[in-house]
Amino acid sequence: GADGALIDNPRHYRDARTAGMMEQTFAVVPRAEIFKRTGIQFMELNSLYQLYATDRQAPWVLEAARRLLFMPDLFNYFLTGAMRAERTIASTSQFYDPAGKQFATDLLRKLGIPAGLPAALVEPGTLLGDLLPQVADECGLGRGTPVYTTASHDTAAAVAAVPAAGSRWCYISSGTWSLMGMELDGPLINDGSLTANFTNEVGVEGTIRFLKNIPGLWLLQECRRAWALEGKEYGYEQLTAMAGAAQPAETVLDLETFYAAGQSAEKVREHCRKTGQQAPQDDGEVCRTIFYSLAVRYREVLKTLEGLTGRSVDAIHIVGGGSRNGLLNQLTADVTGRRVVAGPVEATAAGNALVQAMGAGQLKSLDEVREVVRHSFQVEEFFPKG
Image (cartoon, rainbow, N blue to C red; front, side, top):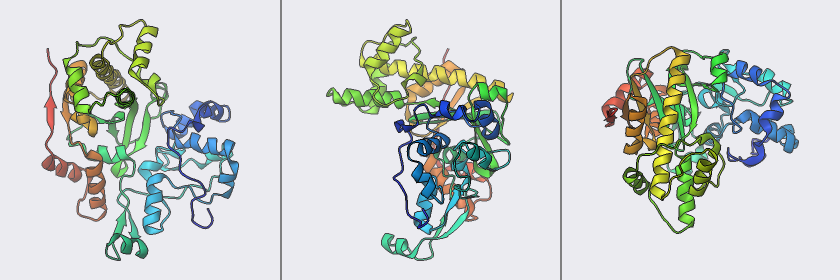
Protein backbone atom coordinates (compact mmCIF):
# COMPACT_ATOMS: atom_id res chain seq x y z
CA GLY A 1 0.00 0.00 0.00
CA ALA A 2 0.89 3.67 -0.02
CA ASP A 3 2.30 3.36 3.50
CA GLY A 4 4.61 0.48 2.52
CA ALA A 5 2.67 -2.10 4.55
CA LEU A 6 1.02 -5.28 3.28
CA ILE A 7 -2.60 -4.75 2.30
CA ASP A 8 -3.60 -8.41 2.59
CA ASN A 9 -2.01 -11.69 3.57
CA PRO A 10 -0.16 -13.69 0.89
CA ARG A 11 -2.05 -16.72 -0.42
CA HIS A 12 -0.79 -20.24 -0.99
CA TYR A 13 -0.25 -20.87 -4.69
CA ARG A 14 -2.67 -23.81 -4.64
CA ASP A 15 -5.43 -21.65 -3.14
CA ALA A 16 -8.78 -22.56 -4.69
CA ARG A 17 -9.59 -18.94 -5.55
CA THR A 18 -7.98 -19.37 -8.99
CA ALA A 19 -10.29 -22.24 -9.99
CA GLY A 20 -11.81 -21.37 -13.37
CA MET A 21 -9.83 -18.14 -13.66
CA MET A 22 -7.90 -19.22 -16.75
CA GLU A 23 -11.08 -19.66 -18.78
CA GLN A 24 -12.41 -16.29 -17.58
CA THR A 25 -9.11 -14.68 -18.56
CA PHE A 26 -9.16 -16.29 -22.01
CA ALA A 27 -12.59 -14.75 -22.59
CA VAL A 28 -10.90 -11.35 -22.40
CA VAL A 29 -7.46 -12.12 -23.85
CA PRO A 30 -7.18 -15.29 -25.99
CA ARG A 31 -4.91 -18.08 -24.80
CA ALA A 32 -2.70 -17.88 -27.88
CA GLU A 33 -2.15 -14.15 -27.37
CA ILE A 34 -1.12 -14.62 -23.74
CA PHE A 35 1.40 -17.28 -24.75
CA LYS A 36 2.78 -15.21 -27.62
CA ARG A 37 3.47 -12.34 -25.20
CA THR A 38 4.82 -14.37 -22.28
CA GLY A 39 5.84 -17.87 -23.43
CA ILE A 40 4.70 -19.26 -20.09
CA GLN A 41 3.03 -22.60 -19.44
CA PHE A 42 -0.66 -22.35 -18.53
CA MET A 43 -1.30 -23.25 -14.90
CA GLU A 44 -4.00 -21.95 -12.56
CA LEU A 45 -1.36 -21.09 -9.97
CA ASN A 46 0.32 -18.46 -12.20
CA SER A 47 0.42 -14.91 -10.84
CA LEU A 48 -1.67 -13.61 -13.74
CA TYR A 49 -4.66 -15.65 -12.54
CA GLN A 50 -3.96 -14.82 -8.90
CA LEU A 51 -4.24 -11.13 -9.80
CA TYR A 52 -7.31 -11.67 -11.96
CA ALA A 53 -8.95 -13.62 -9.13
CA THR A 54 -8.15 -10.78 -6.72
CA ASP A 55 -9.65 -8.26 -9.14
CA ARG A 56 -12.85 -10.33 -9.37
CA GLN A 57 -13.19 -11.30 -5.71
CA ALA A 58 -11.60 -8.42 -3.78
CA PRO A 59 -11.15 -5.47 -6.15
CA TRP A 60 -10.47 -3.11 -3.26
CA VAL A 61 -7.09 -4.81 -2.80
CA LEU A 62 -5.85 -3.77 -6.24
CA GLU A 63 -7.45 -0.35 -5.91
CA ALA A 64 -5.47 0.29 -2.74
CA ALA A 65 -2.23 -1.31 -3.96
CA ARG A 66 0.72 0.79 -5.07
CA ARG A 67 3.29 -1.93 -5.68
CA LEU A 68 3.30 -5.68 -6.36
CA LEU A 69 6.10 -7.74 -4.83
CA PHE A 70 6.60 -11.43 -5.48
CA MET A 71 7.40 -13.43 -2.37
CA PRO A 72 11.23 -13.33 -2.65
CA ASP A 73 11.02 -9.61 -3.41
CA LEU A 74 8.89 -9.12 -0.31
CA PHE A 75 11.60 -10.63 1.89
CA ASN A 76 14.22 -8.45 0.21
CA TYR A 77 12.01 -5.45 0.92
CA PHE A 78 11.71 -6.42 4.58
CA LEU A 79 15.52 -6.73 4.75
CA THR A 80 16.49 -3.57 2.89
CA GLY A 81 13.48 -1.36 2.23
CA ALA A 82 14.13 -1.68 -1.52
CA MET A 83 11.16 -2.58 -3.72
CA ARG A 84 12.52 -4.42 -6.76
CA ALA A 85 11.35 -7.29 -8.96
CA GLU A 86 14.07 -9.91 -9.43
CA ARG A 87 13.89 -11.15 -12.98
CA THR A 88 13.82 -14.96 -12.56
CA ILE A 89 10.76 -14.92 -10.30
CA ALA A 90 9.08 -12.16 -12.33
CA SER A 91 9.43 -14.24 -15.49
CA THR A 92 7.17 -16.98 -14.07
CA SER A 93 4.23 -14.61 -13.52
CA GLN A 94 2.75 -14.93 -17.04
CA PHE A 95 2.78 -11.18 -17.44
CA TYR A 96 6.50 -10.88 -18.26
CA ASP A 97 7.74 -10.58 -21.85
CA PRO A 98 10.94 -12.68 -22.20
CA ALA A 99 11.68 -11.32 -25.67
CA GLY A 100 11.36 -7.66 -24.67
CA LYS A 101 12.79 -8.38 -21.19
CA GLN A 102 10.11 -6.31 -19.49
CA PHE A 103 6.69 -6.70 -17.91
CA ALA A 104 3.82 -7.12 -20.40
CA THR A 105 1.91 -4.19 -18.95
CA ASP A 106 -0.37 -4.07 -22.00
CA LEU A 107 -1.63 -7.52 -21.04
CA LEU A 108 -2.44 -6.31 -17.53
CA ARG A 109 -4.32 -3.31 -18.92
CA LYS A 110 -6.48 -5.51 -21.14
CA LEU A 111 -7.50 -7.46 -18.04
CA GLY A 112 -8.28 -4.32 -16.06
CA ILE A 113 -5.32 -4.79 -13.71
CA PRO A 114 -3.34 -1.64 -12.81
CA ALA A 115 -0.28 -1.67 -15.07
CA GLY A 116 1.82 0.34 -12.64
CA LEU A 117 1.88 -2.37 -9.97
CA PRO A 118 5.09 -4.23 -10.94
CA ALA A 119 8.33 -3.00 -9.38
CA ALA A 120 11.46 -2.13 -11.35
CA LEU A 121 13.24 -5.23 -12.65
CA VAL A 122 16.72 -6.22 -11.48
CA GLU A 123 19.03 -9.11 -12.36
CA PRO A 124 19.99 -11.99 -10.05
CA GLY A 125 23.17 -11.01 -8.26
CA THR A 126 22.21 -7.32 -7.88
CA LEU A 127 23.30 -5.43 -4.79
CA LEU A 128 20.06 -4.10 -3.27
CA GLY A 129 21.70 -2.24 -0.40
CA ASP A 130 22.53 -2.83 3.23
CA LEU A 131 20.40 -4.52 5.85
CA LEU A 132 18.11 -2.07 7.57
CA PRO A 133 19.74 -1.08 10.89
CA GLN A 134 16.93 -2.51 13.01
CA VAL A 135 17.10 -5.83 11.12
CA ALA A 136 20.89 -5.99 11.48
CA ASP A 137 20.67 -5.31 15.21
CA GLU A 138 17.92 -7.85 15.83
CA CYS A 139 19.80 -10.54 13.89
CA GLY A 140 23.16 -9.79 15.49
CA LEU A 141 24.70 -8.83 12.15
CA GLY A 142 26.95 -5.90 11.49
CA ARG A 143 25.41 -2.72 10.18
CA GLY A 144 26.37 -2.36 6.56
CA THR A 145 25.84 -6.06 5.80
CA PRO A 146 25.07 -6.13 2.05
CA VAL A 147 22.00 -7.84 0.59
CA TYR A 148 22.14 -9.25 -2.94
CA THR A 149 19.34 -10.62 -5.03
CA THR A 150 19.80 -14.24 -5.96
CA ALA A 151 18.05 -16.32 -8.59
CA SER A 152 14.88 -15.95 -6.55
CA HIS A 153 12.85 -18.64 -8.27
CA ASP A 154 13.91 -21.90 -6.64
CA THR A 155 14.23 -23.74 -9.95
CA ALA A 156 16.37 -20.94 -11.40
CA ALA A 157 18.76 -21.32 -8.46
CA ALA A 158 18.73 -25.11 -8.79
CA VAL A 159 19.45 -25.00 -12.53
CA ALA A 160 22.36 -22.63 -11.91
CA ALA A 161 23.85 -25.38 -9.72
CA VAL A 162 23.45 -28.21 -12.24
CA PRO A 163 26.99 -29.64 -12.52
CA ALA A 164 26.82 -30.00 -16.30
CA ALA A 165 29.19 -29.08 -19.12
CA GLY A 166 28.60 -28.83 -22.85
CA SER A 167 25.13 -28.70 -24.37
CA ARG A 168 23.84 -32.29 -24.72
CA TRP A 169 22.08 -32.39 -21.38
CA CYS A 170 18.77 -31.59 -19.78
CA TYR A 171 17.80 -31.20 -16.16
CA ILE A 172 15.10 -32.33 -13.79
CA SER A 173 14.68 -30.34 -10.59
CA SER A 174 12.97 -33.07 -8.61
CA GLY A 175 10.80 -32.55 -5.57
CA THR A 176 7.09 -31.90 -5.03
CA TRP A 177 7.19 -30.80 -8.66
CA SER A 178 9.53 -32.08 -11.34
CA LEU A 179 10.76 -29.28 -13.60
CA MET A 180 12.27 -30.82 -16.72
CA GLY A 181 13.94 -28.76 -19.40
CA MET A 182 16.94 -27.32 -21.19
CA GLU A 183 18.91 -24.11 -20.87
CA LEU A 184 18.55 -21.94 -24.00
CA ASP A 185 20.05 -18.64 -25.10
CA GLY A 186 16.64 -17.14 -25.90
CA PRO A 187 12.90 -17.88 -25.60
CA LEU A 188 11.31 -20.52 -27.82
CA ILE A 189 7.77 -19.27 -28.40
CA ASN A 190 5.95 -20.90 -31.28
CA ASP A 191 2.93 -23.09 -32.04
CA GLY A 192 4.84 -26.20 -31.01
CA SER A 193 5.76 -24.95 -27.55
CA LEU A 194 2.22 -23.59 -27.11
CA THR A 195 0.66 -26.95 -28.02
CA ALA A 196 3.07 -28.82 -25.74
CA ASN A 197 2.43 -26.26 -22.96
CA PHE A 198 6.13 -25.61 -22.33
CA THR A 199 7.37 -22.57 -20.48
CA ASN A 200 10.10 -19.96 -21.02
CA GLU A 201 11.43 -18.74 -17.69
CA VAL A 202 14.50 -16.59 -17.11
CA GLY A 203 17.64 -18.10 -15.63
CA VAL A 204 21.01 -16.73 -14.57
CA GLU A 205 23.01 -14.65 -17.06
CA GLY A 206 19.94 -14.03 -19.20
CA THR A 207 19.47 -17.69 -20.10
CA ILE A 208 16.03 -19.19 -20.65
CA ARG A 209 14.83 -22.20 -18.73
CA PHE A 210 12.74 -23.91 -21.40
CA LEU A 211 10.91 -26.48 -19.36
CA LYS A 212 7.79 -28.41 -18.49
CA ASN A 213 6.19 -28.51 -15.06
CA ILE A 214 5.48 -32.14 -14.20
CA PRO A 215 3.68 -33.32 -11.06
CA GLY A 216 6.65 -34.84 -9.26
CA LEU A 217 6.58 -36.53 -5.86
CA TRP A 218 3.40 -34.66 -4.88
CA LEU A 219 1.23 -37.75 -5.27
CA LEU A 220 3.59 -39.84 -3.13
CA GLN A 221 3.56 -37.11 -0.48
CA GLU A 222 -0.23 -37.04 -0.53
CA CYS A 223 -0.47 -40.84 -0.21
CA ARG A 224 1.99 -40.73 2.67
CA ARG A 225 -0.17 -38.11 4.39
CA ALA A 226 -3.29 -40.26 3.88
CA TRP A 227 -1.55 -43.38 5.19
CA ALA A 228 -0.47 -41.44 8.30
CA LEU A 229 -4.12 -40.64 8.99
CA GLU A 230 -4.72 -44.39 8.89
CA GLY A 231 -1.99 -44.91 11.47
CA LYS A 232 0.71 -46.01 9.03
CA GLU A 233 3.69 -43.71 9.52
CA TYR A 234 6.00 -44.33 6.57
CA GLY A 235 9.30 -42.53 6.01
CA TYR A 236 10.33 -41.75 2.43
CA GLU A 237 13.21 -44.23 2.52
CA GLN A 238 10.76 -46.88 3.70
CA LEU A 239 8.33 -46.07 0.89
CA THR A 240 11.14 -46.35 -1.66
CA ALA A 241 12.24 -49.69 -0.20
CA MET A 242 8.63 -50.95 -0.35
CA ALA A 243 8.43 -49.87 -3.98
CA GLY A 244 11.71 -51.61 -4.76
CA ALA A 245 10.38 -54.86 -3.28
CA ALA A 246 7.12 -54.66 -5.25
CA GLN A 247 6.52 -56.25 -8.63
CA PRO A 248 7.54 -54.09 -11.61
CA ALA A 249 4.69 -51.78 -12.57
CA GLU A 250 3.11 -51.53 -16.00
CA THR A 251 0.24 -49.26 -15.00
CA VAL A 252 0.82 -45.62 -15.97
CA LEU A 253 -1.00 -42.90 -14.07
CA ASP A 254 -2.01 -39.58 -15.62
CA LEU A 255 -0.21 -37.60 -12.92
CA GLU A 256 -1.73 -34.28 -13.97
CA THR A 257 -5.15 -35.46 -12.76
CA PHE A 258 -3.87 -35.63 -9.16
CA TYR A 259 -3.29 -31.87 -8.85
CA ALA A 260 -5.49 -31.05 -5.86
CA ALA A 261 -4.85 -31.77 -2.21
CA GLY A 262 -6.49 -34.79 -0.60
CA GLN A 263 -5.09 -37.56 -2.80
CA SER A 264 -4.71 -41.12 -1.49
CA ALA A 265 -3.86 -44.67 -2.48
CA GLU A 266 -7.56 -45.38 -2.95
CA LYS A 267 -7.83 -42.52 -5.44
CA VAL A 268 -4.89 -44.05 -7.32
CA ARG A 269 -6.76 -47.35 -7.53
CA GLU A 270 -9.96 -45.57 -8.58
CA HIS A 271 -8.04 -43.85 -11.39
CA CYS A 272 -6.71 -47.22 -12.53
CA ARG A 273 -10.18 -48.72 -12.63
CA LYS A 274 -11.53 -45.77 -14.62
CA THR A 275 -8.68 -46.05 -17.16
CA GLY A 276 -9.00 -49.84 -17.50
CA GLN A 277 -5.61 -50.60 -15.97
CA GLN A 278 -4.54 -53.03 -13.30
CA ALA A 279 -4.75 -51.34 -9.91
CA PRO A 280 -1.87 -51.70 -7.46
CA GLN A 281 -2.79 -53.85 -4.50
CA ASP A 282 -0.61 -53.05 -1.50
CA ASP A 283 1.12 -49.85 -0.46
CA GLY A 284 4.44 -50.84 -2.00
CA GLU A 285 2.80 -51.41 -5.38
CA VAL A 286 1.15 -47.99 -5.15
CA CYS A 287 4.57 -46.39 -4.63
CA ARG A 288 6.11 -48.43 -7.47
CA THR A 289 3.31 -47.34 -9.80
CA ILE A 290 3.87 -43.68 -8.92
CA PHE A 291 7.62 -43.91 -9.56
CA TYR A 292 7.16 -45.78 -12.84
CA SER A 293 4.51 -43.33 -14.03
CA LEU A 294 6.86 -40.45 -13.29
CA ALA A 295 9.69 -42.08 -15.27
CA VAL A 296 7.33 -42.62 -18.23
CA ARG A 297 6.29 -38.97 -18.03
CA TYR A 298 9.97 -37.97 -18.12
CA ARG A 299 10.39 -40.00 -21.32
CA GLU A 300 7.40 -38.31 -22.94
CA VAL A 301 8.60 -34.82 -22.01
CA LEU A 302 12.17 -35.61 -23.11
CA LYS A 303 10.96 -36.66 -26.56
CA THR A 304 8.96 -33.43 -26.91
CA LEU A 305 11.87 -31.37 -25.58
CA GLU A 306 14.30 -32.80 -28.13
CA GLY A 307 11.77 -32.31 -30.92
CA LEU A 308 11.04 -28.67 -30.07
CA THR A 309 14.67 -27.63 -29.61
CA GLY A 310 16.32 -29.87 -32.21
CA ARG A 311 18.91 -30.83 -29.58
CA SER A 312 19.75 -34.40 -28.55
CA VAL A 313 20.24 -35.30 -24.90
CA ASP A 314 22.91 -37.70 -23.70
CA ALA A 315 22.58 -37.09 -19.96
CA ILE A 316 19.75 -36.16 -17.61
CA HIS A 317 20.90 -34.21 -14.54
CA ILE A 318 18.54 -34.68 -11.61
CA VAL A 319 18.95 -32.22 -8.73
CA GLY A 320 16.96 -31.46 -5.61
CA GLY A 321 15.46 -33.67 -2.94
CA GLY A 322 14.15 -36.23 -5.43
CA SER A 323 17.70 -36.95 -6.59
CA ARG A 324 18.16 -39.05 -3.45
CA ASN A 325 15.63 -41.58 -4.72
CA GLY A 326 17.85 -44.25 -6.26
CA LEU A 327 14.92 -46.33 -7.48
CA LEU A 328 13.35 -43.42 -9.35
CA ASN A 329 16.74 -42.46 -10.79
CA GLN A 330 17.30 -45.99 -12.09
CA LEU A 331 13.77 -46.21 -13.49
CA THR A 332 14.37 -42.88 -15.24
CA ALA A 333 17.58 -44.22 -16.81
CA ASP A 334 15.86 -47.47 -17.84
CA VAL A 335 12.73 -45.89 -19.30
CA THR A 336 14.45 -42.98 -21.09
CA GLY A 337 17.53 -44.90 -22.18
CA ARG A 338 19.77 -42.04 -20.99
CA ARG A 339 22.55 -41.71 -18.45
CA VAL A 340 21.24 -40.10 -15.26
CA VAL A 341 23.46 -37.93 -13.05
CA ALA A 342 21.93 -37.42 -9.61
CA GLY A 343 22.91 -34.53 -7.36
CA PRO A 344 23.47 -32.22 -5.70
CA VAL A 345 20.50 -32.63 -3.39
CA GLU A 346 20.69 -29.04 -2.12
CA ALA A 347 21.03 -27.51 -5.58
CA THR A 348 18.67 -24.63 -4.83
CA ALA A 349 20.61 -23.60 -1.71
CA ALA A 350 23.94 -23.96 -3.53
CA GLY A 351 22.75 -21.99 -6.54
CA ASN A 352 21.34 -19.32 -4.24
CA ALA A 353 24.67 -18.80 -2.46
CA LEU A 354 26.79 -18.99 -5.62
CA VAL A 355 24.67 -16.47 -7.54
CA GLN A 356 25.14 -14.07 -4.65
CA ALA A 357 28.88 -14.81 -4.91
CA MET A 358 28.63 -13.75 -8.56
CA GLY A 359 27.01 -10.51 -7.47
CA ALA A 360 29.79 -9.91 -4.96
CA GLY A 361 32.40 -10.45 -7.66
CA GLN A 362 33.79 -13.66 -6.16
CA LEU A 363 32.71 -15.65 -9.23
CA LYS A 364 32.68 -14.23 -12.72
CA SER A 365 30.22 -16.39 -14.66
CA LEU A 366 27.65 -19.17 -14.66
CA ASP A 367 30.36 -21.49 -15.99
CA GLU A 368 32.44 -20.74 -12.90
CA VAL A 369 29.43 -21.41 -10.68
CA ARG A 370 29.04 -24.86 -12.22
CA GLU A 371 32.74 -25.55 -11.93
CA VAL A 372 32.53 -24.84 -8.20
CA VAL A 373 29.54 -27.20 -7.94
CA ARG A 374 31.39 -29.98 -9.79
CA HIS A 375 34.30 -29.70 -7.34
CA SER A 376 32.11 -29.36 -4.23
CA PHE A 377 29.47 -32.10 -4.44
CA GLN A 378 29.49 -35.81 -5.10
CA VAL A 379 27.07 -37.09 -7.72
CA GLU A 380 25.83 -40.59 -8.52
CA GLU A 381 25.42 -41.96 -12.02
CA PHE A 382 22.76 -44.41 -13.24
CA PHE A 383 22.94 -46.21 -16.57
CA PRO A 384 20.11 -47.90 -18.49
CA LYS A 385 19.83 -51.62 -17.82
CA GLY A 386 19.22 -54.19 -20.49
